[in-house]
Amino acid sequence: MKHPGARARDAADPLAPLRARFVLPPGVIYLDGNSLGALPAHTAGRLQQVVSKEWGQGLIGSWNDAGWIDLPTRVGDRLARLIGAAPGEVIVADSTSLNLFKLLATALRLRPARRTLWIEGGNFPTDSYIAEGLVDLLNTLGHADPPYRLLRGAPDDLRAVDGEVALVLLSHVDYRSGTLRDMRAIAARAHAAGALVLFDLAHSAGAVPVELNACAVDFAVGCGYKYLNGGPGAPAFAFAAERHHPGLRQPLTGWLGHRRPFAFEPVYDGQPDIRQLQVGTPGVLGLAALDAGLDPLLEAGMPRLREKSLALSDCFIQALDAHLARLQLTLVTPRSAEQRGSQVSLRHPNAFAVMQALIARGIVGDFRHPDILRFGFAPLYVSFEDVACASEGVIDVLQSEAWRAFSTRPAGAVT
Ligand SMILES: Cc1ncc(COP(=O)(O)O)c(C=O)c1O
Image 1 (cartoon, rainbow, N blue to C red):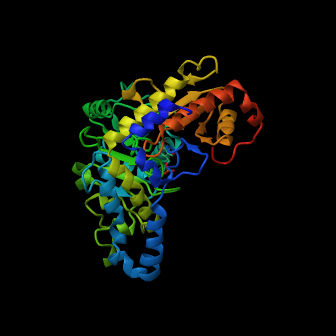
Image 2 (spheres, protein in one colour):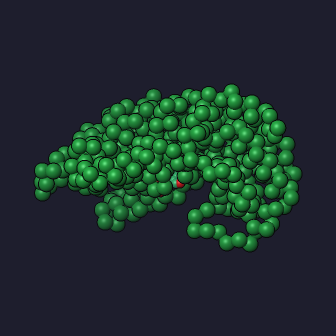
Image 3 (cartoon, helix red, strand yellow):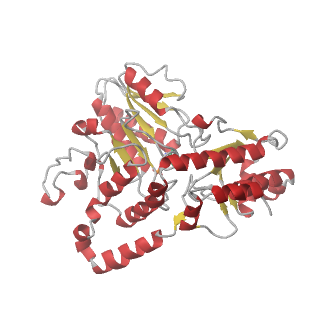
């Protein structure tokens, strides 16, 4: 028997039965749930029901009869349970990028005398781009005086966060290295300077326990298509702590953020709660798929998911550890469990070709520019045997130099 140790761990794993609730193509070891979560088996049925019955038969009446209109807050309330938020503090809408824009602007309005936006220099690009776009808008069209400015820094050095800083924006888990930040300490540090804090939870929602309220976080955003298994382009989410709801004033003042959208009033009067973050008509199919994606996560619960995720990433690191130097691999992800998200990243000078060779063997992770191999361990459907096979695959692709055959392959539009 191959990998008896791993098989024994799978047999003893209380979450192992959940794997059968996902559609996983035969011959594929899927370690990219940090980019696009796998398809839950019941999602197709749920969509079929929404399409055929609610849309096909119920037609427009389904906005009320099937509760479509409340899906953004209903799904938000379920998601809130995974991120330590209360009902009414999370809405599912739009993309992470758009939600960032709305919440960054909200936060700046809450600290009108402060003109600095502290952002994590190495954050996922959209976070920085959106912050840049907002600052540019305020300074050019708004003629802000003194002007707004961005201050770029590292999450482990918040010394520059002073009385000028309105908001600290950073990721809870770094998308490249998989480093998990100390949310409580960062929020406390920002608050000590009188600043607000906004966490991007793209790589932590559904992957690691998140305690937004216990850490007194002000705002958060995150993706629905990664560990939440909502499907490609799934709607994103936005969190605003209830204490900020009276002061919410976001700039994308669409009709569905209005207190009475169906009164069709000529002048905007925003909802005094999380619903103000909604802009236009919700995408019902995407919301229904995300709702279905949350089921197995809520069933398993974050503590058990975290325990398994760490056990999986530990196994992967241990299996490769003795070979790292000789294979020109560098472990980028922290070894310490407290600082590790649900992925393991390795640096290699030929990372792109190495990942292509792995994918050709059915071991699917991804590549991040310029030299990072990422392996995500979604604990709902990744098994210990997957980890054993994947680590063997990595060693073999490098040892045999099988990656060389892929070194001239052009990259697809999406890596
Ligand atoms: C940290 C982080 N933020 C934001 C995004 C993307 O957000 P959007 O849903 O707007 O594409 C990603 C996508 O991978 C991400 O990793």
